[in-house]
Length: 192
Image (cartoon, rainbow, N blue to C red; front, side):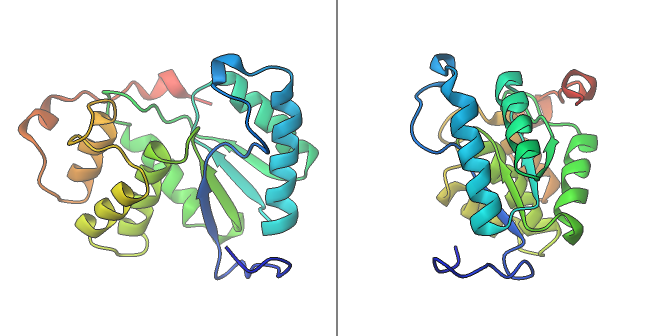
C-alpha cells in the first residue's frame, strides 16, 4: 500500500486484492443486517478515495453481497463487475477464468480491486493465475505465494479442491490423481 496521503501510481499499483470492502466488523454473513449497505458504502468510498480504485471485481456467489456492493459502487462512481466464482469441489470453467483474466490484464480497468468474502481462496486463486499467466511467475512460485497469503490447498482441506486442481493443471504443476475426477462447474449456473 502506498504511504498515507500519497496518491498511488496506477501503473505501479494496478491491481489490489482483499476481502469484501467493509468498514468495521459485522460478523458472519448470515448475521448481516441493514448495516451491510452502510459499511459497504464506506468501504467502497475508502477504496475510491484512498486508492483511486476505478473497478471492483467481486468473486462472491452470495447475491446479497453482490447487490449491496453494486449499489455502493454505483454510489461512489466505481465500475462493479460480478464474476461469480464458486469455492467448492468443482473446478471453475475455462470460460469464467478467461473472462476474469481478460479484465485483469486490461489496464483500462486500473486501479482495480479484486475480492471474495475473505480475500484468501478465490482471490488467491485468481491472483495466482494472474501472476503466472500475465506476469510470467512460475506456477509453483505463484502457488506458494497463494498459500502464504491464505489459500487453503488440497493438503489442508478439501473445500477448495476444485480451485486447487484447476490451478495445478492450468499451470503445469503435478496434481494428485483424484484431480482428474473433479468435475467442472456448469458455467451457466453462475452467469451474471
